Length: 217
Image 1 (spheres, helix red, strand yellow):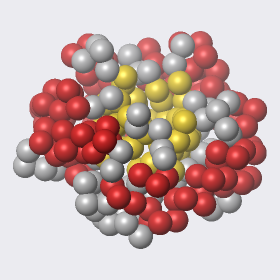
Image 2: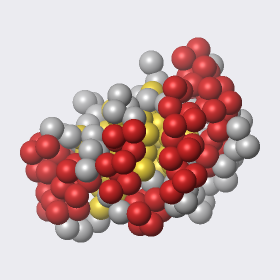
Image 3: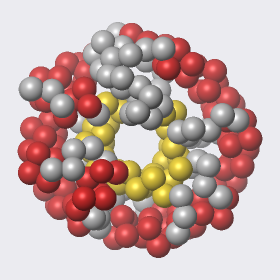
């Protein structure tokens, strides 16, 4: 079954918590988005972990340096998964790996702005990442758009060939409008953000996406 991850990027704390709690029944992984962490620190990771203890919590730290220290800050505050940018140095990624192993957590590598996925995948292969996210930035992907998703198949083929044990997450403007382009990719995790947390009724939108993921079409 494809898991649904909420990329909760709102930096307004009250809105963040309200949305997370409203949609929790339909979400498998609750992401504390980068803007939220920048606004409130990793204490917000702890608060959402305490409020929703049965959910997997991802801290979208987007680590690019200081791998161990920054990953520990998230894991110590209840994160189950921490993100690191794939173009970070091997040393930085290995330090995130060390922190994840120490805390019993997991690592998600974000491929945003990586053009040579073959070299990237070969570089990180010794570190056995649990997740690799094929990602187009919010600045370059409008909600519901699909052109960028059409380029994901080749990228995912490379990752699955070089990193066969890694679970694949896909992100970038995903909504009910472009899910038909997501299913052929057969990802393990679908990440939806703005389509849910910017909606007038986030729970309804999350429920609709979750039902389609369960149905597989």
